[in-house]
Image 1 (cartoon, rainbow, N blue to C red):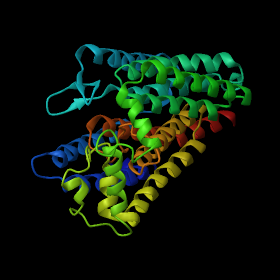
Image 2 (cartoon, rainbow, N blue to C red; image 1 turned 30 degrees about the horizontal axis):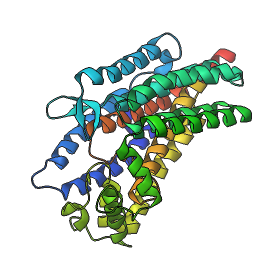
Image 3 (tube, one colour; image 1 turned 30 degrees about the vertical axis):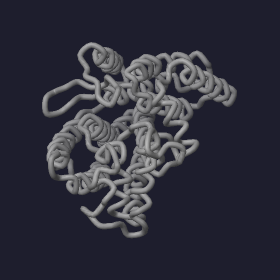
Length: 369
């Protein structure tokens, strides 16, 4: 395994580690009565080991059999179990208390959803034009989506929906079906707004539309985030000199608003470096998808790339005031074990698929000859 680390496929780990390093440098400035930095360093070490071990298997076994379905059902079961054994934090019952750490099943359910959609569409690639396949794939989305929405965790539910929609698009959905799915999405959001959204969730939308309406109340978080992100200016205030986060003006500066904390200390230049690192990861994923031996690997890699783009865009957008507050972490960077381990797990699976693809292609060519 250690010899394999020198292979080009493992290059994907480098930008992810650099982003995680930026996260650790930001968390280090919060040292005092908290242990964010220490916990995140331990979790990062675990996540890296998970990534390396996840890169070992040859994932061709997932194309056939029922392994993917069992993984999907298990993750849905964990989501349902949070309503019985989970604890409530920030108004959402979505985690299991494991002592020093917590487990958030939705982070791993996202990988399971990508896997099951990759298998479903790879087996029906030529039949995707039939609307029944869009409907069946929506059922696969529906179970974790509803369970996540009921926690309630609206942000994570929307990311699940974005992953599904992105995979459906790249799988070859027809134009008229896109319009129909869009209509259903509008109807669904309308229903949620009228009957399901809590008052604080509606207030986040109101604050997004009118940021200065209640900056001392429900709009405080968004207002402080934009101040923190903007105050970094070109070069930033320097590591450890971010006043908005260090003096606790910015709530949840280690998770939901870590980009604002980072931008305050590193400025526009540092933010552009962070953007470049994410672009590097996405570029490597797109290259891996193009070289994938079958549609299963291709769709899985694209699905993971869609997740990273959706989560990164949403997190940065809510930190700079162009999107409503949804409480989503920044991939590879925000404090939190579940999302970090799940992201490195998915990255390791992509590496495993990339590592074995040359051998698969060589075998197939020899069979043809």
